[in-house]
Image 1 (cartoon, protein in one colour):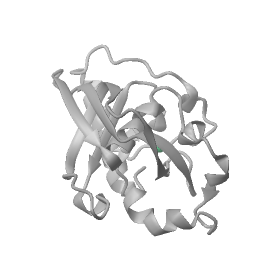
Image 2: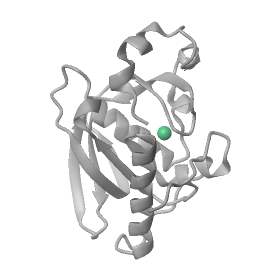
Image 3: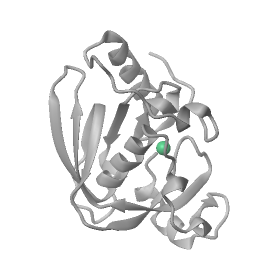
Image 4: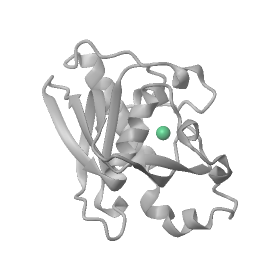
Length: 185
Ligand code: NI
């Protein structure tokens, strides 16, 4: 078990295009995924992309526990999932604004347009191809994590930077009303 150090905005590793994993069954990738899960458990968070722990490879680990599902949402909890070389395909024509946070930008939040229905295709640690559809909160989370693999942080997706703010300030009233459910990374 290892708790990994999180890279923060400004670290060059967060700006890189992460490399595809050639062999998803490599024991080194399994160890990386296990350490990413330990790190998420330690910081009580839901999703982490490998560049956030200083590894420029296309690996994402996430889960959605029942208590993080927004009130009124029909989505089911998502068990721990390791995604290798994930690819997202939008299934909704337009994006909706969602409040986001990021472990690499501690203490801040912002309003980010995201597709609300997507399909994601990825490899498991056993090399099996999995396709999963996701909606709403789940879809936004996956777009956020996969953006990390292409050197994109959520402020780079924002269309109104006046909605980027510190959590300790009260400017974005709507964020605080909806804070608990929308907080995912
Ligand atoms: Ni993030």
